[in-house]
Length: 128
Image 1: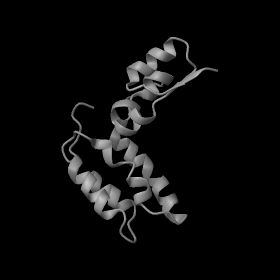
Image 2: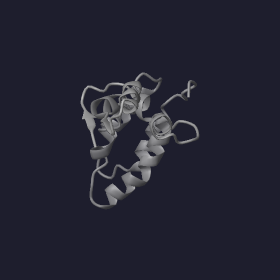
Image 3: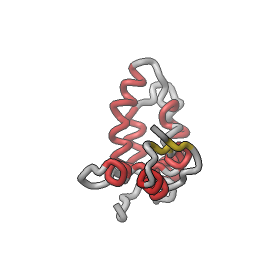
Image 4: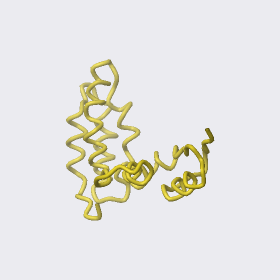
């Protein structure tokens, strides 16, 4: 098995490398900094799954059970939300999303309801 790690900045590049015969590609920093642009279409483009692409909002909803389990195990909300801050970069409401999570997630008792409330600040993505 041959995988490539590093320098892959777009989903198009990842698909191109897979088409050239690589068994795997690592989209680490690109996926971290532009998750909606890269990961929302990955299931369809790389794995051939049918159905609509996921949205950043879908990703947030999917994280809620994980957040609840993390908190139940003694974790803190900000340990998760710090990795979600850039999820809506460039969208109306993104600044409010970041501010609510940055300011609220480290407060004692902060839970998934903060994430749900912050999500209401994001304008619908009409391009999706």
